[in-house]
Amino acid sequence: MDPRRTTSARRWTAGASIALAAGAVLVAVIASGAAQARSLATPVNTAEPKISGTAAPGQTLTGTQGTWSNTPTSFVYQWVRCNAGGSQPDGSDCAFIPGASTTGYVVSSADAGWRLRFRVTARNADGQQTAASDPTVVVSSLPASTSEPAVSGSTVQGQTLTATTGGWSSTTPLTFSYQWVRCGTDGGAADGSNCPAISGASSQTYRLAAGDVGHRMRVRVTARNSAGSAVAASNPTAVVQASANSGPPTSTKEPTISGSATQGQTLTAGGGTWAGTSPITLGYQWVRCGADGGKPDGSNCATIGGANTTKYVVTSSDVGHRLRVRVTARNSQGAAVAASNATTTVQPSGPALPAGAIKLPNGKYSIPVTSVSLPTRLVIDAVKFTPTVVRSRNTTIVLQVHVSDTRGYYVRDALVFVRSTPLVTSSGGEQRTGQDGWVTINLRPQRDFPLKNGYAVQFFVRARKQGDTLLAGVSTRRLVQVRTARG
Image (cartoon, rainbow, N blue to C red; front, side, top):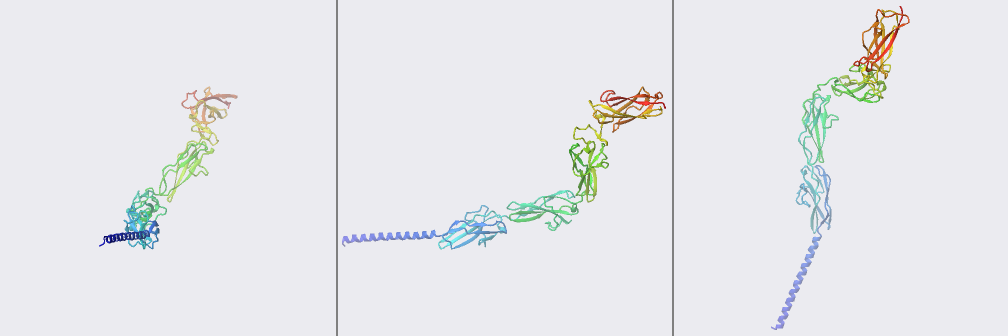
């Protein structure tokens, strides 16, 4: 064979092989591009699905499919139940909820304690992709009573009962409300549903009233959360007993007065303490008493018109008097009156009156001699003889002496002594002035008492404070005389 022909054939064969190999590479590249094109056309989620609604049993949730690129031709929906952490972002590790394959889902009690997602699978001719919503909050469960409410307190009229909420299970915080009910002696139904509700008794405490006597009480507690509400009732109490203090009002602690007993100042009355059937209402009446404070119940003191509240502003008419407040207590069984202690003697709005000052009907003030101290002194400011002319030694001479002090107050309890000069009469020694400052002393003429026309018998009169020496301290002295004549 011609070597040249052999070499030529070899060259042709090599060229053909190279051409075939290049063609194969081209075919592979074309196929790869087509496959890549098909992959790029699969649906792609560009905004994740969402859930609207309340994640609570009985509520309806609504899912939206989100937005997708590459023109999905169909969608498949699936609600899933995830753990409290929310599980994987696409919900792939959450449990499918059988039959929950539409955009709407009614939350059931089986979902309590779980978080829900809405999974959407988008499809087209080139493939499919799945995306999931964010998880809901943990689904709450309806409140469930784990231990019943309890009631504490004495079951006696007028006493206060206190309720507890009892124990409850719930996945969310609870709020509570109360309703007290009045049951028969059998205690009513276990949940108190057949016991009448007591109007207005909706707080955690309840004060037993007269209408509760002979009944047994329960409290019904309603627990609420976002899932709904449930009611539990306490056991019934013992039968409510009447108060040991039932009956008409009885004063157990007298009314009081606080404040300064001074003109222009405000006094405040306290109603005191009362026993008896509730409710007890109180009425007030201020009264004006004498220097002795009047009777303990104030019944002999003058009523002050319009002064029938707990407050009273002291007036000028009260100066020198003592005040009381009379409290009338009333209930369904009757009424009773109690009075406060009397105030101190009311003082004027200016300088304080001496201790023990009493306003007299003539507007003057009477003070005890113990309220007179130096530099103030006693004054004998008036004397009266009866008869004014003595004509017989058988006639008792009546001498009236009035004592005041240098401030003008009438003085009571001052010791007054009288003797004639020379000693021609006899008397009974020192005598005390009365509340009005006057004292009456009877003088008996002796046998040598002179009866002469145009003649007068002189008398030494002394007034002093007990405890002072006879001619010292606040004492005062005066010489007076009475005329005599022959009978």
